[in-house]
Length: 235
Image (tube, rainbow, N blue to C red; front, top):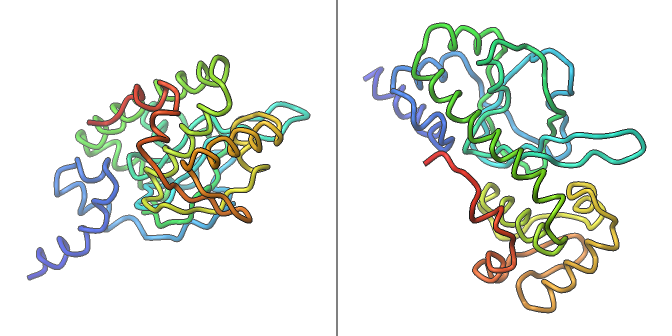
């Protein structure tokens, strides 16, 4: 009876793909050591050069990894949703946060303390293999993001960003201002206004008072650059 109850409780955790791929015994340890928390839009989870206090496994919503240079707003360089984990770099032995991390899509996450995460790394080989695999994928995504920013047009990059958000939010409508999108893409607000206007006029998205709605995902995929369709995954 107790085993059945644990399995029932663990089932929501498997919305996170990294957790879903772990052996049942490791999932049960995560359930016992972790706790569920709400992720609120704009919430700063950790800042660069701080020591990790917690690690996060998003079940819904998503987290942006951002980098900044003096005189400019932070720009998104990576995105973590239910495919991964914030804090995976701890498997490399480091305790320092490499990028600022803030919530860009409301949701729910399983959170562990840094100490409990280290304990899992030291005692659960399957967990370590999963983190190493995820870090490899995340590294490729970060590198692709650099190339995308340098070589692709704003319209294609905006379409890619909306698709990545759509994948992680699992809903067709979300609140995104032009200024927010400009900051995430590292461009002027006017560039986002023009690019989103093109997508709106083509019937790909709807936009009103900061609310963006995906109307035609297939067409959005056609507009997006190769960095979306060619992005590495965990499968």
